[in-house]
Image (cartoon, rainbow, N blue to C red; front, side, top):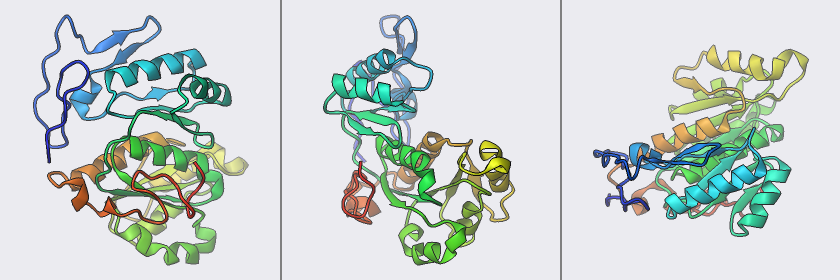
Length: 279
């Protein structure tokens, strides 16, 4: 694996099988003070991945400003913003016509994604889980792994999941997204030994308690090896899964990874074609 190029500040980002980061200086403290936020421009060096904009609670203008500064600091890496409402998405679209927006996920990506290394498969129980599942998909892409999606394979029709087993069995990591009682990760975890992170969603009727029932069900999974993110946290699951996938192929070139060919009707960067959801 070749060493990563220096960032805009001249520091070398930390690769997956890590080297020492360049010490910060008074001239470059590793953050940009914007008054309303201190943007962490050193995170790419420390962790291998840049900071991400969490859009909830921020004004549309702040989202645009943060994306602009992230893109300036790391022009060769995708700057990602999550949890954007319709107004923020419109403002990002106007400011950056080249940005890739997903209105279902509420995400915006500015700049090129890394060459994908390894493969993450996002498995969603139902179409109502799409917002969380798509947030995970775009996070995986921004964090440098290939992604495949399998949707609407919940346990009420388990034959659909069994028919898709070959599609998730060759992945480096799985993200399994489900609401209601949250049973899907346990079933998937009993069918494969692929590392699995479960994401409970807030989808469900009254006694689901906004995803708490699914969360508790996943935490109490009988299937060994199921780890669980917070309710609706597709972003956190995407970060974890992408890093697992990248580490699984540390030291190998992207052409040597399973994501060299587009799986399941998707391009290598995860962009949907005929078999995927429209982006």
